[in-house]
Amino acid sequence: MVAQPQREGESTPVRRKLSVQPQRVEETTSLEEKTGVQPQETEEMVSLQGVPMTEEAFEQLIAEESPYRYELIDGMLYDMTGSSPEHSALASRIEQLLAGQLGICGPCRLHHEQYVAVPGHAAVVPDVVLTCDVGDWDKDKRLKPFKIRSPLLVVEVLSPSTEHYDHTEKFARYRCCPTLEVYLLVSQGEPQIEVYRRAQEWRQECFTAEHTIKLDQLDLKLPVSAIYAGIL
Image (cartoon, rainbow, N blue to C red; front, side, top):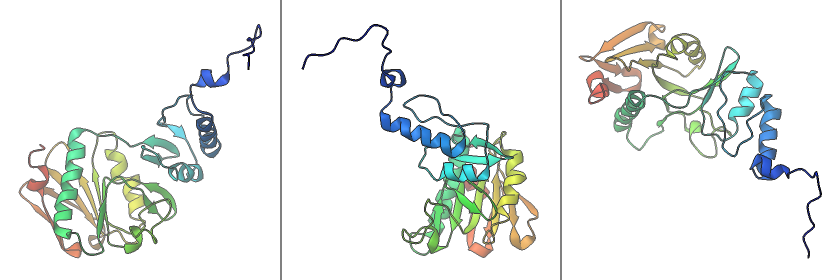
């Protein structure tokens, strides 16, 4: 077949302009319809930041697989992905120390950067969360899309940009989870951890390097010095 010459004044095909496959165009249109936000025209998935959004649109957004971890704060969408090396190391160390005591048997599981469902509020993403509800990890029983329904212990490593949020609105949301027993706020500037327990009516307890945090209701111990060793 002989190729037809391009007619004078004929525009460049849309596919060349966007540099994306037609299926990708459909996916971005779907995102725009769900959230009211128009993504950039690019092959790479783009993080959304500081965008006004309803709770309904937020839940639809996080139902899709994404490399980003979003939270809805005062009606605005924020990307919580990424952290300092100290932040990441402290969260990993706590997860390791807890995992070593829990073992590989039993119903309890640790997760990091996974959404926690909060009754009556938008979902949130803790640095580390412990659940002992089989329904939170069993393939046939867990929520789809995946969210943790029964958190027992939640850990947040404090950052300058989120410290106020972690102490106030995010803490208030976590307290709405009827299964939550302990909330830990971990400083990344000095060896200090704040502990809040439901059994103590969420009163603040502060632990420093010479202390060991005993979580009697969970039969767990966290030496503060071991958490920070080699990190700070």
